Structure formats: structure tokens, C-alpha cells
Image 1 (cartoon, rainbow, N blue to C red):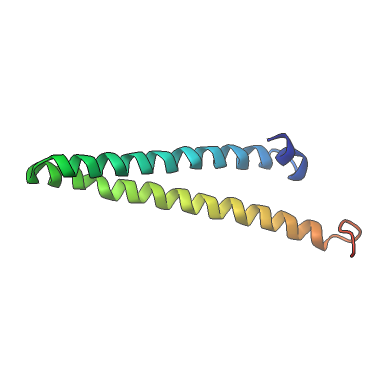
Image 2 (image 1 turned 120 degrees about the horizontal axis):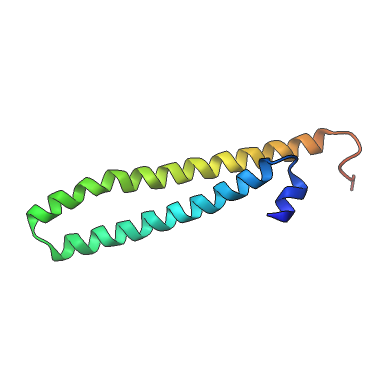
Length: 94
């Protein structure tokens, strides 16, 4: 987080770092929920399977939201890099 704070100006680096950590937790939740659902489907009956299938869409939604968050962080970092690269005298020439 300290390196990110030095690279990105203001409090934006702190928020992007915290968002990245939250996305990691979201991915872990999606993976564990998927495994739990799969194990419940394998050991349960048809009625239980139908109830558990209701959880499929929220799990997919969580994984999709995490992916969108990753893209947002990547766009912010690329935008900052391009701003620094286009500023005169900031990038060294080979």
C-alpha cells in the first residue's frame, strides 16, 4: 500500500489497494460457495438441489462483480501510467 501511495497521487491509491483486497475476498467467497454448492448437490436429493440452485446466480454475480472491479483498477493504473508517460521529462529515453 505504501508503494501504491507513492505512485498514485492523493488518496486514490489507498482506495484502489483496499478495493483489490476486497476483490480477493470476493473471489475466495465465490470459489468456496461454488464448492459448497457442488458438494451439496452431490449428496442431496432433487428437492434440495432445486433450492440450492437458487444460489448459482448470486455466485456468478459475485464473480462477475469482482471481474469488473479488476478491470476498473487496471484502467485506473493504465490511465495513470499514460499520464506520466505523456508528461515531458518524466520518462527516460532508451
